[in-house]
Length: 532
Ligand code: ATP
Image (cartoon, rainbow, N blue to C red; front, side, top):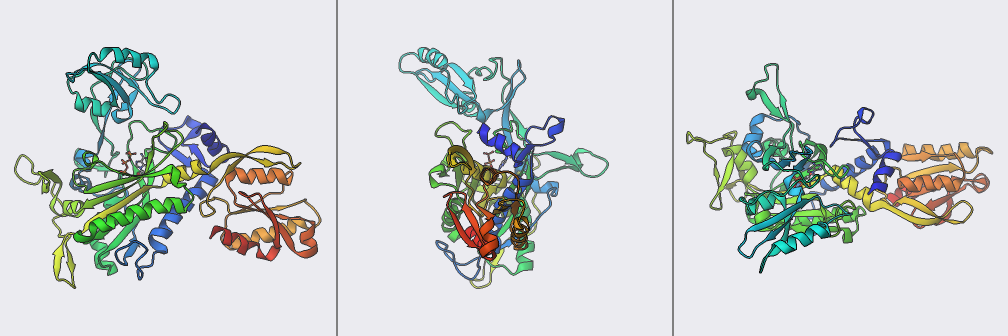
């Protein structure tokens, strides 16, 4: 992973935010190449979800044809949105601090091994932060625990959050960093608070959205009334979200400011299970269609106890990030069957699950604790004359996590001949051509004999076709190839002596290293064809 992060910085993909001031944890800036890369990820998502979606034909595997529309909604929404949605009361993580070294931990990220006796008592517990290099507890500590289990007992592995839930009376393990005492885990709301207007009282408190989804729910009726969409249909949005993560880490994977690509798909309740299956499979395929190998990707269905109180089913699409321990995967996207929870919450008020039924939560005065808008969000089916609240399937992806996964997947060190034909190690980013930040590079073989002018012509034609293209006339051609390989450019085009004689150029493929000659006036079509 260190090689990937240093390449990302060296070649201008990603920089630490406010770098010259020492940086800020959890915030990242994209450089020139990273900006192109992330834009391609967003565009590929938007094309698939909205612009290339054909509402007249049911896509393969879909129960019927459907419409998809896009919105762009405000980052600071009405504070009541978060009260009805449950984020105000429930959007928190648990954290614990070390009283000694002052380190702060998200309790679900701290691994705990505990010696549990046959009677179910915790005899001793050790905490540690699993990393790729040290995914397990040290052998000495493991042995120490083994001795404490006693007859019939066992050593279990869990995380600090689950540990405190399962053994509320057991003493806390020590700090995984310095061995000092940890504070009792406590709740921490992840929403960034800000103030509207000049007075700044608690009533003026507003929040930066922690997800883009609510923007789609509160506009469901506006979209329905203004776009003449009919069920089933989806509302899509790409935009920034903010979470005050306790322990931002693993490069851009867990940031405090990040971008989401979300779909809220509204459908009839009786068809929702079928749509859930459809979206899980379709979103999984989007990653493999854009270059992620299936062997590095899993679709993980949540266990019943992992599900949010309103969710009927959730599956995560997870990637084998190189910073994770062997066998672990990190979430790229969650696809959730949310039932009618969201629309009902914004209509009736914050809902709680009581004996398997969603009911409005009441305050001490017997009135709704957080009332909704009071507006009906029912759907009237003109054909069947039925009125009902649609169900929602939500595929929710992170643009930064997808970008990071594409970068990790593309990174490879192989061997290729240098300019003298000697095999040398080469760093290459094997991006899918749709994702690659630069699509082609144009080189004049030498800086004379009219070659730069011809190369500039080809460069101009590629630019006019809207393609991102590089021009390089510095150093030996072999070196120039290396520079392009390192940023993942799929095609290099060289103008040489023959170009001036017969109008052909050399095109060289990043992956096969094959070189062939094509007419100079066909270069744009050749590159477009490669991108597909
Ligand atoms: P995690 O369990 O990793 O915190 P989550 O389940 O809370 O993620 P969701 O609320 O389902 O995440 O958000 C949908 C998507 O948004 C995630 O799959 C991820 O791609 C992205 N995302 C969420 N939190 C972050 C973050 N802090 N930094 C970058 N991307 C994020």
